[in-house]
Each structure stands twice: as C-alpha cells, then as structure tokens.
Amino acid sequence: MKNYLTYIADELKALTAIPSPTGYTKHVTDYLDKELRALGYAPYSSNKGNLAVTLGGEGNPLVLAAHVDTLGAMVRSVKANGRLKPTTLGGHQWATCDGENCTVHTRDGHVYTGVVLNTEPSAHVADETPERKEANMEILLDENVSTKEETLALGIQNGDIIALDPRTVITESGYIKSRFLDDKLSAAILLGLAKWCVEEKTALSRKVTLLFTVYEEVGHGASFIPEDTMDMISVDMGCVGDDLACTERMVSICAKDSGGPYNYELVSDLAAIARELQLDYAIDVYPHYGSDAEASLRSGHDVRHGLVGAGIYASHNYERSHMKGVENTFRLLKKYVQE
Image (cartoon, rainbow, N blue to C red; front, side):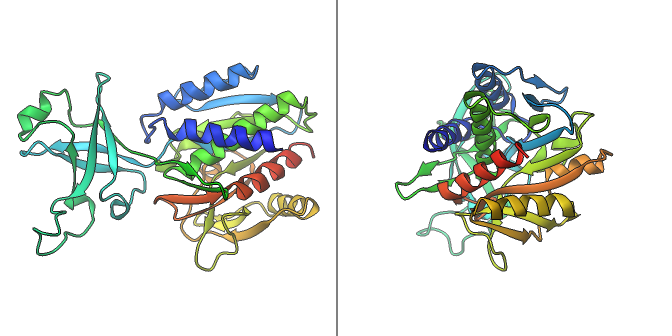
C-alpha cells in the first residue's frame, strides 16, 4: 500500500504543477496520456478533450470520473496602466487570491509571471482596502510595463489564460496543502488505481473505465461518457466544514448535493464496503455542489450515479487534505472494482 500512496503523492505534485484552468487543459491531458501509456494502457480522447482509458474487465460497465480542469481566470482586457483586468473561470473566489503569484499564458506560447492584487493593496497608502471582488482585482506583470501598448507588445491579449500558483506541500505529518486538490488529488488517486491494476494483475469484477474530464468546473465535463456505461462514480473532493461529518482524514460518500440525491443502492453499497474494510468514512450532504455524474444525467445518460472523495477543507481556496483520506479513498475504490 505504501508504494501506491507514494506514487499518488508524486503524481499529485506533477499534476498540480501543470497549469490547467478550464479551457486550457491539453498539457495536463497529454501528461495523463503519457503516464497511462507508460503503464501499458491505451487511452483515448473525446472530441472536446476528455481522456478515457479502460482498465479491463467485462460486463456491467463502470466509469470512475475525475476532473483535471481547475479554477482560474482569463484576461478580460488590458488596462491603460498596463495591468490586466481578469474574468473568472469556474467558481473562482477572488477573496482567496489577493497576493497570490500567477502565470499568464499567451496564444503564441509565451508565459509571463505576475501577481494578483486588489487595486489598492498598500496599507501605508490606502484609506480603505477595496472589496476583494472581480471588479477590484488586477494582475501586475513581472515586466517593465506601465501602459496598455507596452503590455500588448509582449503578445498578451484578451482571452489569454491566467493560472494561479498551486503551492503544493505535503507535510511529514501527512497533510496535503495545495490549490486545485479539487480535483487533481482524485486524478492522482485514479492513476494509482491504474498502476495497482497492472502491477497486481487485478481481476476486475466488471468493465472499468477511468474518465478524466476537462470542463467540470463549468458544468459539462462528463456530458460525454462511454455509451455502454451502467454505473458512474465521480471521484471528486469530499466536503469538510460546518454541519458535515467528514474530516480531511476520511473518505466522504455523498448522499445528496445541490442536484439532488445520488443513487440510493450505489451509496449503500459504497458504505457497506467502507464498513467491511473498517475505513474511516462519512456519508454527507453537500449543500453547494455539483458533479460530473450529474452532468452525465443531464445529458441524457441512463446511469446509476455516486460520488466519493478524500475529505478536503477550504474548497475553492488554498485547500487541505490528508494522506489518510487518500488511503481510505484508494482502498474503497480498490474493493469496489473487485465486487
């Protein structure tokens, strides 16, 4: 088990190091494709960029889905002072980004570093700090520019991608701190599952396909799934917070979110396996949440749906989880694909 957890931790660091805000995900899916092929698989892509790979097995097809698109921003316009005015990609919270380093990715392949700040960040200057909302935020480039024309001359234009630095850290005590654990932590866990299936020559109880989606943060990531899918489980972040039972050290099983209840029998099966394995787990209701599984249902797929994931605190912020939550999630998925 330890070597798979180490592999998952290493893959998490690799995945978070690849900027992939929604709409700018080819680099991260190319990385996944390379890693899966190195394990001996034959992944394939959908027209809009989702990456799928069948691990093996026959009958009663199951899809395990994680998304690799993240929150981020886009250049809305270049201001007269040469700074960039942003527009949000996904459910981005600007209040959590003030003072964060970032990169700007141009369409001709240039990458510029910068920092996200509010329009008057200096305590010794401002009478009041502006409210941290999109209209009051800007990106200062680490370039000698002070006019719109100078910034445009760098090749930066409206529609360029702005990616926040992830700042990924795994402490000696097992805590995982990073932006975009939602959902690159789950993507790393699914890579660990793929590695385990190969190395242990696992006998799968059914056809199992991994699906890595690229538009989850804007609601239509898994509107494409293999046509023969019977069951689909989103492997996404487990919520941790007020009025929820889950902690960062647990695997969370979602019974209901903003889209309604998950399949009762599937949730019950997952909980039964968690009890059998004596995992640290919780069944919870997420009040403000939507998943790839629900995107599949809305697009007309007749599937049973579920949602599990390692507990993550401070979602859509600088997030925190724990390797014990990773282990509990990994063990739950391993057992489920064998039953």
